[in-house]
Length: 98
Image 1 (cartoon, helix red, strand yellow):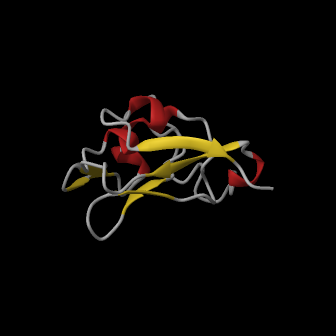
Image 2: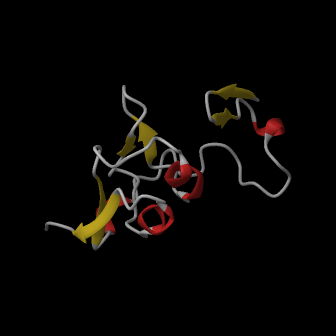
């Protein structure tokens, strides 16, 4: 396990907490194709707090080069947890384009 700024990176399964799933459980499951809504980040409002990343159940939130939240839509299921947890409401949910 190592720290990368605010993030904790688990390098091997033995580093995971006992109740965690194995590494890579969603890494190969591209689940973003069935969502109805998608989160959109207003970079001007984002304060780089990492709360959205912390609560995302799919690990689909990354940091851009400025440390702002960036959504990986290949894995995002559109649950809206990131938008609900954002303290400055920088993430809004919009209807997915079909």
